[in-house]
Image 1: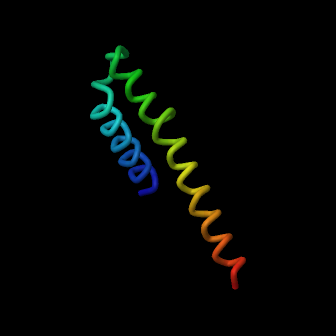
Image 2: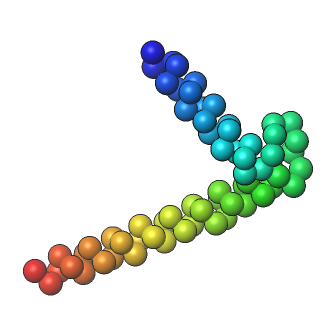
Length: 64
């Protein structure tokens, strides 16, 4: 059961990467594009978003 869950999650991730960057085995522009989107745009944007939300909450709790 747990193995099937992990396999299904992995296949979902592979599908998402295929949609972003192309099919497996084609490590050209699509592969680079997928890495840029994930590691240069998405990850830093999420870090910045969570930092801003954390500072907002901290300021709100400080006013109490």
